[in-house]
Image (cartoon, rainbow, N blue to C red):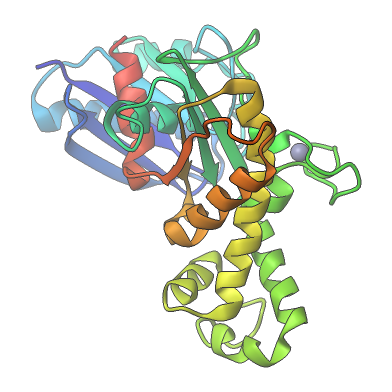
Length: 315
Ligand SMILES: [Zn+2]
């Protein structure tokens, strides 16, 4: 049995696990991400790695680290850490080596989670797969012929910043009308507002899931309400799914994938999101009659990133 360690660094929490070669997490640890980031975070990663080795009483040399941002093509350096202070430009492989006694690989969080789903989750039978993380933003990753597609500079598959509307809302990346402006968490909440504006008398039921105000409503509330059949919440997911299918129509005609997997918080609504996305893809697809890939939701939840990056570290 070949064990590997995966560490998934999020904006608020660190998840670490020892993963066996069937994708099972046999030991795990969780810590809060130190706000100051930088060296404090690097040292906490090392502490987690060392503690995990003690927990399973084995020296493990295959270690992977997943984090949001652009990662260098040699998988050592964070070129730009998007939600972590003080990691931009840091060569994590070099800084961690003396602290843990091994070389690590660094991977973008969407790539890591995509690989986890591809190897052990929803994408097990796929060879050419598009993957999304629909959360605060829209992360993307791509498997081509059974390999992660990284592009020339390691930054490929940023589907969230594919532009779907020339005059759409301004995105954090500086462009207008990016895909994530229509399908990520904040877009779901904007679709809630649109649905309420169209039928204000129906808002009361939904707002009760939070503290009674629109501001007090989270994506999680909207998801729970949609699952209970709330009309406003269902409409918001339908609008989100329709945009998803619209953008996917372009990606599918370029990439011809066999499967599309939706991960991240927004995808917890399951079929409530996947069904309208499927219908919209069929309606918007170029070349009617062209065989279209299925759209499914992810299966591995919060473990996808750490399992994926541990498996990638195994090489
Ligand atoms: Zn953008």
